[in-house]
Image (cartoon, rainbow, N blue to C red):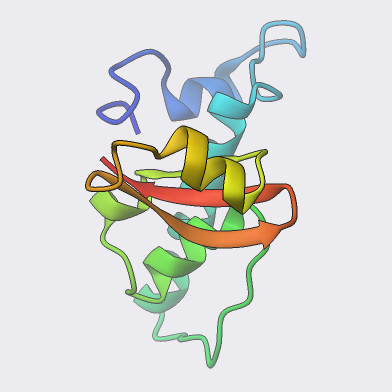
Amino acid sequence: MTKINNGEWRLLEELVEKKTEQESRINDTNIAQPLLFAIQVALSASLVSWNIYPSFIISHSAGDEAAAFVADRLSLKETVRILAVLMNEEEVENKLLKGIEHLVCIAVVNSPRSVTINGD
């Protein structure tokens, strides 16, 4: 995580070393979602190390990235390049991705106003 966020924060510091709620940035989305991803992947890795494998994987929201990684559908590098945006599919295609379609694509349409994109 430190490499991915360019050293801006440390996972363990944010998760356990902060002394008070005011010091913690755990409620900041840019910290909370990567932390949740790391915990979900670490828990899955622990289970696999004990020869416990899932029969299927169900996910929701930010857990989609961890599920895709755990299911071996995306590499770690691919997984961390996923971004959820609060736009509809048409807005994403016509405004956000216009001219950069070769770098980014729509990965999932989560709802009428929530789209997940993936790419460089």
